[in-house]
Image 1 (cartoon, rainbow, N blue to C red):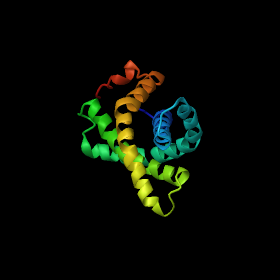
Image 2 (image 1 turned 90 degrees about the vertical axis):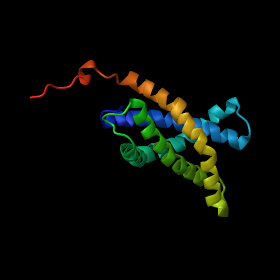
Image 3 (image 1 turned 45 degrees about the vertical axis):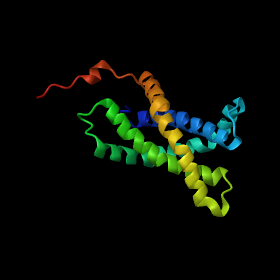
Length: 163
């Protein structure tokens, strides 16, 4: 989807917002035991902290790892576009979920000497939500928004004549 570094930054920013905000809402709901309107407002306070962490991790580390995994799973030249999306999205969640759960455990949980157990539990609670939210909602919404910000030109779909 993104064709250059600028587009990669924009795509990552949009994806980070949709994923991190939803996951913060989810975790606040888990911690408080209920989903209320207040959760949506409270999530913005944590988004200021977790958003930049997610952007840095995804843009500089995870996206490269996920793309490398995807290249081993599917042939990007001949596979269906949905296969590419899955091949990138699944490892992205597999890497980001434990890393973001680690950041949340460090910043927001008083884990003490139970740190590893709390981090693993946080990851286990977050993974199903992150996985399905990414595949079913955030991914399609972000790609839709991105396509409308950066529509592909008809000229770019044509191939140059062989010389």
